[in-house]
Length: 332
Image (cartoon, rainbow, N blue to C red; front, top):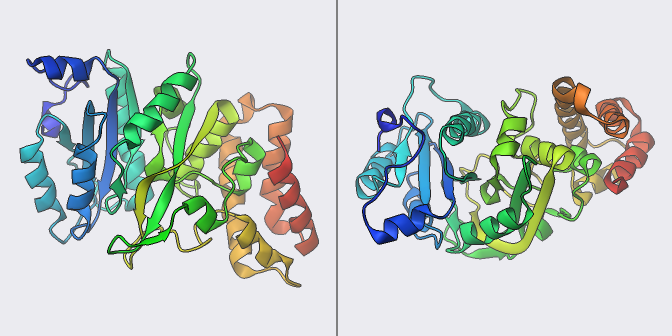
């Protein structure tokens, strides 16, 4: 299916009984940005098309690859033409977060024009999905969703090396993150959501988009919106093989993602302010300021206080940062 074939936002109807059965289930749009992913892309695509929930539309956009990525996408498009779409434009290289943001904007328009129930999942080009990934996250989503409330469901992940060897059975443990801390104040300083594990409803996209330039990453921004205005739900099960290799845009190198885990924060327990932690405070502060600018009229007083606390974190001294960071992670 080429981009020119999209008019109504709905996939073409099939004639078989199996096709009708599939279309009676919710449709899941899988958004996959691609950039120089030739080494692992085919393995990820295979895992997407092997999902137990098979009412899917895989939507890809290449971000200016100079390897064989485009050829690989074209091959899979030929084999899976009813379940795959390539977005083509002249926007050039947008980067990982920008590519995801564009795809999410496209997905929201698609959802708004489609009469059936549609959800959105995010994918990375170098991972491998477990066969029940979509089924598991969809079960949690449909059980929790109510009205027009934003809902984000995410899971744990296995951390694997470039050859698929297991490095850790839990990304959360590997990065020192606590997914139970779902409060808005905690998410302001420590993102616990990994984008490639996410399933979202339309209400979340409506509320979150567009992702602002000051967002640290798209998944952190989505976690903030879900924790503030809806539900942020975690599945304590690894549903993705999260591959680590030299070309990762944002890898799971222990505790080094753009989030303030307890182990990252422990660097502040030294007798000086650690430069890495200070940079993370500055990024979190800029993102919090963008959140306040977008949603100021909708935030209750206690959330406004949380945002303002994060905005002033970089300007505090060592002991002030230590105290305030702990307080924010404890607040509900």
